[in-house]
Length: 171
Image 1 (spheres, helix red, strand yellow):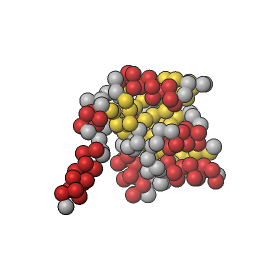
Image 2 (tube, one colour):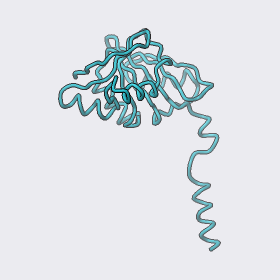
Image 3 (spheres, rainbow, N blue to C red):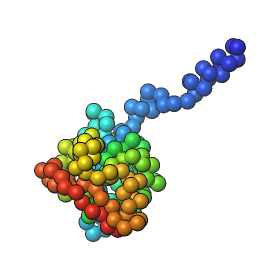
Image 4 (cartoon, rainbow, N blue to C red):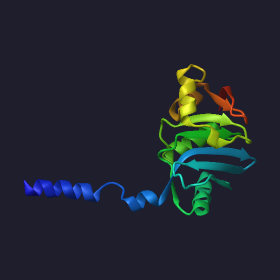
């Protein structure tokens, strides 16, 4: 019996995140990506209350993450991202990269937005309510990628005043 209790205690102690690991990271909540010519621009909001919005630009998504981590001084965990806002970029390639490399959750919402958009004013909750009220289509990352591969995907476009309208993505 003592061996079983010791085994459970060992498993409990040796697994999971320690407090230090949790505080050493910023957890990405919302990411905005825009492309102008060959340059990618990003803005990131985090769950961490102490984190400010971080902006970066680069040629690749990996470069954006590296520059953002240097800017905020902590590593960025992307697995709990709730919302991706895209502007003038290849939607299919961007979402595939986020899903496969950044390991963004398949339930992450995807919307389009203007470059003057205040990204902190749009949340996944706003989109969930719009979907429940049938004012917006289902727009999670997996649905968008599946629909793009068949023909066209439906999502939401947010204007700079945070009003929205339905949008169609063609790849």
